[in-house]
Image (cartoon, rainbow, N blue to C red):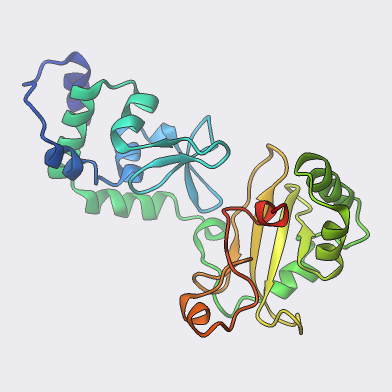
Length: 252
């Protein structure tokens, strides 16, 4: 049935009616992860808890848009169908309309849960997970004396023009570490920034084109340079999330 729908969309042999803005807004609410898998499962890959476009993993498939975090390129559902499936507007509208109103999304959700369930990728970081163990004993982040820190300093100093003293200060205070596998900068958030005895988040920033790893968060809305709304209201906070990237804030 799906193949017939796609053939009909590509052939253009369907009634080309006028689609109002409200209609487009409605059908554009289709879950893109489900839509991509339904249209062509081979175009979707699950990596590091994120659904990505297979063959070009810089493009991450979110619920209502596709986004490239490397250059800020964003695709709406209509644009995504044109970019990744080669569909023109009447075909895009037809597919989205059919999918939104006709396809059983519950079946697709069950399929995703069954076929994309990988413990290392889908298990959230629970509050009882010891991020300190990951940092200091599991070989996840290199010690300060490791050569990876030379890479961190070179990247931040040469590429991002951040003062060397600022970089060394972050490293020496334990706020910046390095991912030994993917050369990611790892910004460490402590429950108590002075005691540094309980790590609650590891915010990552890639330095190369190698595989990017997700942030590790023990609590929702935690991370480097991020303060919860209630803390902001009471002015009881150590750091505030101002820019998209920790690196951007360091260079401000």
